[in-house]
Amino acid sequence: MENNETCIHGGVSPISLLAELHHSQAGSGRHRCPTCAYEQGFNLGSSGNWNSYEQYCNSLTDSEICQIGSTAPSHILSNLGDNQGGTGRHKCTNCAFKQGFEVGVLENGIQDITIEIVSAPSPQENQGNAIITPSKIDFIEKEIRNKHLGLLGELFILKSEIEFLKLNGKDDLANKIRHVSVEIGDGLGFDILSYDLLGNEKKIEVKTTRSDISRPFYLTRNELEVSSKNPRNYYLYRLFDFDSNLKKGKYYVITGDLANSLTLDALVFIAYPKPNNSN
Ligand SMILES: [Zn+2]
Ligand SMILES: [Zn+2]
Image (cartoon, rainbow, N blue to C red; front, side, top):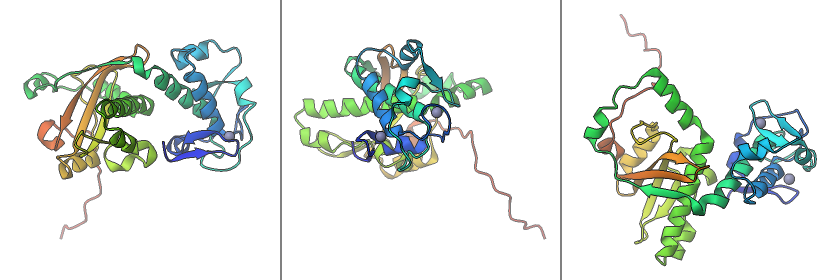
């Protein structure tokens, strides 16, 4: 994947993940290299020895926890190379280790994930779920803000798009697929640039939740506008019942202008004081 950063020790990690890490000046990982921490985490996670990060953490006898709750072993943190430069300068090595580990677990196990494609719910089916209580909103919000879960879902779709094109003899197109939300950033209104078998672009937005098909999901104004401007190329992949530990999930696909296929209800407004035109 492009837009990775290579550190002076030869470790590799995605720049966008490094950029999102919080600062940390504490613990054995202080001023050490988060890129190396990411790579060590990735190597352990993809080793096939652990099914999950939680399982690995429970096996540790020398763990340290950062201020936002990411665990990493002291023996690894204290052996990381020094780092005072790059995107990861003074960033949390615990969090970098955790992210690497979790991506590693997913990449190792992704072949075994069983994902079932289902048809999108009809508008009638959605009517019964129109009442959204505040606690439900909290729950959905937590899931959507769970960037890690979102990344896992994107990685799964990325992998399955590549496999689909290769299976159909389109290796050239498979090699052109880009994980744009990681390589470029969040502002494009979609996560993955893929292709159909004819070589037409597919702008894929992935929405992943652990909860069931009836749950609503968040959409940004930008995502909506990009779908309206590119109705022939826009695909929303809705992953639900997604459980990366049990290696299963389901998804449906909605294409085209999302304003035509979704019932939209605003939860957040951008508000400004009105200009004073009383006179
Ligand atoms: Zn390094
Ligand atoms: Zn941290």
